[in-house]
Length: 395
Image (cartoon, rainbow, N blue to C red; front, top):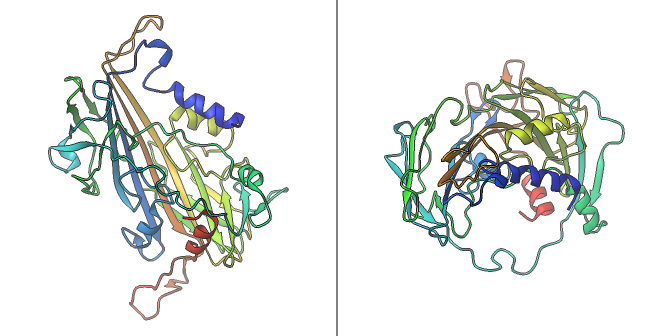
């Protein structure tokens, strides 16, 4: 394990609903909530709620269980050590969520052993070319390239290595009860709010697991992102500031031919960001801002260097705004760190907003470059990334 990964993992473990060293036992019950806002826009079409958005949703920062297409998504999970095999529970929700009075929590389905691994892993194909950093020009020492047909696993590992977001939230694993589930998979309505009173109940769950969400602890606004410039030159990516954002990270990718993928990230360090398009704790975001990997919350634009995507068949840029995180416990942690602390329950809420748009599809001279008839909507075609993604990653 690399030093960076070990450090990030340690930082994530420290943040678990207080300080682990200050409690003699874990909470009787733990409840996780992950709230995501996903958006995708194509010039001339506005926000996309289906089709291409659904196709790329999971790859571009989808939620664990709820989905990845544009919209608001909520994932929840409950664990109680009074019933470690999983319990049937209920999450009472506020009226602003507009999904009824409560959401059912069902034990996560167990995956058959070896599912998804029959026949062994297919060897990656093609070539990856990686650039990084905001600015008009490509930095010295770039790009980094790996040819999967000529390199071995050690070289792939070095290329793919990077910082990552520890999985500390609502995850469908054995022993946890989750929503959405087989009984209820309703979509969160656009404009719904988490603000208000929440309560979690079920066999083995302490009766007082109640909490309220206010202010910034709600779904984040959509990312409003735009690109300007010819991909053969520098492309400026700009966005509207989000008040609750702790920081931002961008990455872009495009294909050249059938076997080459070009990748760029906004990091000043050579980190492709494979593991950063997910929820991050504010403390980790601040650390990564200090390391010049994540952009500070006051930044509102980043230039993709000239020529990176000039010869591609299509390119897309994705972005994440890291939101706040709320950790609650009852009873609260004592002021004296040496005092024993045996919380009955703990709650963790994580929040993020992700966005995606296409490079090089601006409206030109007051007319849409791909419109066919006056007054008709433009004919937009998705970049040809699917085959490259599948060829390289086996998706």
